[in-house]
Image (cartoon, rainbow, N blue to C red; front, side):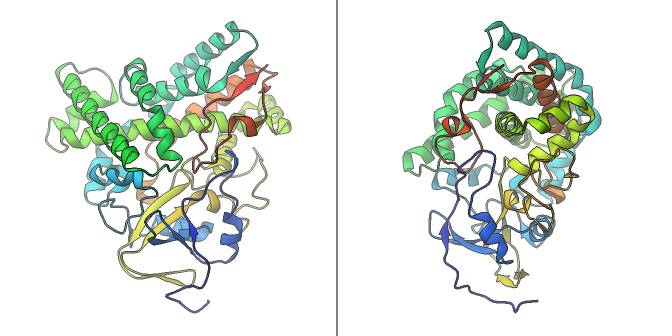
Length: 409
């Protein structure tokens, strides 16, 4: 073991690092991972935090109670000034026990694999309807507008017990703000706009909860209200925060996986042929694509005590960023890690995190992606990109979001 150090002579780079391709994490990750130690990087405010790029270290930290997720802790890393307002809106993945345990327990039954499977027929019907609409327009379409956005939005809204049309207007109004924020355009105006939209959505969900309380149905939100809000174990504000999280963590990452995942698949026709010939490979293919793309590439933590990681001493109060996109391509864990292999045993990937903050919607996401990929490739056997991915992903970002993806068949 290398000796523990408190400082480093390595040059510190600005963070977040940006993707040059939606399929792959930032190009700087491999050289950082090769050092074997956490890499010092600087946030917008020049505060140093530690970037974790090795699989073993990432998995250990995500499951270690000595690293907290409380966004109100001053040491918790915020990647851009535009998101500083989010400290006023703690959500399930940005809070620690015991508050975290209470909130997760209230909703976890709604996100079991069994529950996700009950939605499979409805998801299949929706996928077919969207492809019918695409085919009715001819032999080309924008995959984002015609399929990825409405499919991901619909299944996210099902997880809340609402219709997709109820949130379409909010998505449209917020698109410009979201693009500014994810491209790290740091201005006081952008930060104010982000905070205002977060507050507005929180108020929207409070009104939605009131409506469900007065007119309950057979849906997730109504059940949580009956079992937890009405019994006093969960407040309306806490449930509104959970609805907020389900919405933002369901819509964008699933949409990104549909666009980037299809693009990556289409650049490997041999892998498309395998899943067409044997649909039983689809669940494993979803895990492999999640591993390679890692749509939520960074997970923040803050050290709650002095901890040694990879020979580097991380002091209490210092921020840590787990780059699961780098960890998921660690050759020590995944041989030939940059290769798409739908037969690979990739279930141990960290795209959904691990430990107490393992993604609540992982089961719903995986079933939805399995249906979406399978249906697209089955019903559109000649599916291909109409433009090179470089033309669709023109501006480097720290997320794999593609605003438009023309395809033909």
